[in-house]
Length: 240
Image (cartoon, rainbow, N blue to C red; front, side):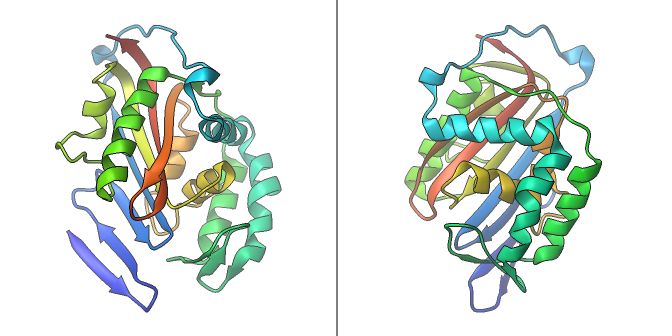
């Protein structure tokens, strides 16, 4: 692990090797992305159980709706909701609407690259909410929210895929995005799309991955960053 301290803002960049997870940590912004795929021969048929609105908070429903909005028409989403964010940048500092100032790694160039990428991206099918994935996300929120840690590993040593498989089994491919410190659905999704400081743009790839069909979202308090949002994705899933 390499840890780099930069400037007076306390921006902390953690590079984890091998690159199975990425963390960009700042006082008001932390996001992590992870993805894994199985060969088709390892997969089997999914059941079609989905989470109902009663299982999700309003905010969690809004996050899923926002993800599906960008997947439906990435180019239009970029034009309507990302292009206006250019006015929020002052050098490497960005202040999203209703939020505090954040020191970024790349400045507006990351936003511009995101806009350009979304303009070339084909639509993807909407994600259906899956209750078991939401439970896996909830487990991680409760764990990290209590102890103030970040990243994909649970305090019990569990990985993203261990938690997803507690309630069933994922198939074909699965992934996870985590956002810390953002307080509304659009900002959570926009920050993950921009993916500042992440060379692989892994969060964006997870959000736009056309092989993903299911998602579970959980949002809760975090001892250090105030709030955290975990998104667990899968191509298919079968319950226990």
